[in-house]
Length: 301
Image 1 (cartoon, rainbow, N blue to C red):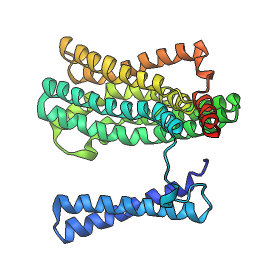
Image 2 (cartoon, one colour; image 1 turned 120 degrees about the vertical axis):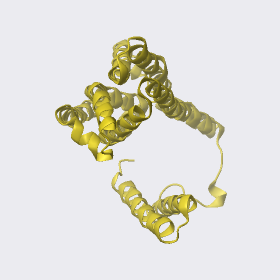
Image 3 (cartoon, one colour; image 1 turned 30 degrees about the horizontal axis):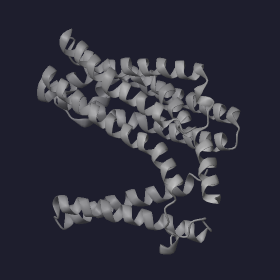
């Protein structure tokens, strides 16, 4: 709906609460894993409560009263049509990392796995700005697709790509110049650092491509083309990245450098598919607007 400040406040509150409760439950009360779990659940419950209170006080259309909870068949169908592919693609993406971890263990064993794990944490931080920009593009695109302003949706995507390039390319430059410094953040074992640096140098090439894939996928999700983005994720995570990592890392004996190339090679393949889809013009079909109008007609009847 265009309000990104309040969610930021609620999430920040949840994070701070989680940290404080972790220190209390785990550090002081010694509740171990149970304490960590309780801290997470409590902080998330607080965040949800703040969201509900804020929306009720600001005349949100839904009042959260028991009598207001109803299921509309057509709306439910639309939710599943748009949301289910996104749900599946998140699961597929996580599954691919299981296969990559197995390949890494074959190539280099425990120290290699530790080095790749360190790079994975770095990757999570590097992806945050790009993922946030993709989410913003998705939200703005959805609003403009719904308003029939495709030109403004395209403009939002372009701006998102530019900002993502600025951030991602800067990170790529830094990790190429100072790879050891970044890996050392997560440990001092020389072998782990060496393996992490080898993997990071090839894997970080992916930072040159993700501004395009993430933002354009966000743009397509905004138009309701979630099935296409699901196909993209399956293509990238399973059909390209895993085989390429295995081929370069094990079949060609390139080791961690070859495994690291799997991500950028997969992104390049996905980007090629995205370009073909954009050139076809199919992205102009507004899935959400078309199905929403159909749902509203059924409800009126």
